[in-house]
Image (tube, rainbow, N blue to C red):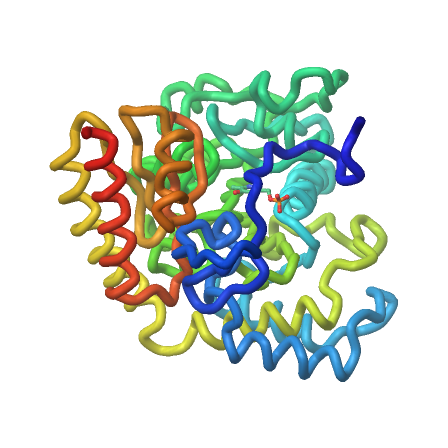
Length: 390
Ligand SMILES: *Cc1c(COP(=O)(O)O)cnc(C)c1O
């Protein structure tokens, strides 16, 4: 008999009743160090006093009014995002997939509006992940996500991640945009080289394409910069954000330059919930913390500490672990042994992680992680490796 909750997930038989900072407490009374952060979402950990206060304060004011009205909290958040990024304007959505839907619509509309109505195709990378709506599974590509859902919306071409020759060769007269994750998340924590990101910018300029960066997983401080593409100094025309931006409150955003958003006029796009006062209060609260002086440099520094200590373990257990990769606090342990089993053992030893493609275990701790917690995580990984060998 089907479960009342539609069985679309292979869930672990474990539930958490409470979280505090980098720790989660299960209903059966165990404590776990959380290096998953709800898949890069709870960027300030659990039960963060500032976020709790922001949520409660806003809950006493107003939750939802709809986009029939001005929403001052949203105007403030958009203004702050615009000030701190390449972008001139922001659309608020409720999830990553919806942020990408906005980016895809925007790219088609841009060409329609600027005299090239036939340009609609978007080139994405192999092993990408852009979401689970019909259009974003088309963007994602691959049998695993698209099987059984035909007809898949048309208009996406896939090329090898990191290969600019393939990218150039895939551009056609009807290509509208390139959409890339600066660090692939679901694909297995695969960072693009900075040279690749810069060359994508050049290619887009050369062919009149829009450059879309999907920073839904790698953005909002995860790599030690506000957004990952800042490392490359290669600004996109459009960027999508979600996961960490609400600190655990569901929200997404599509940021764009004024030029790229030329067609996004009143009536072209919308969302009932998007940008509601409660979500906007949480977005602003997250930015209050993340953009505070010294916060992002600390993420970079602590990421380096995690990198150094974890590298050591990887080097000592080559029969278990093949490679550490990633940036900042978005790291991947590529395993020799099956990564799913390794993740299970880590959890049994008290460390929660997330799987990813290419036999990788993702390490996505909250950005507020301290050295003591890093030591604890490294010790659990080491212990798990040791147990594997014995
Ligand atoms: C998670 C993710 C998405 C989809 O976000 P949802 O909120 O699940 O719709 C899209 N792109 C990337 C890079 C992601 O990591």
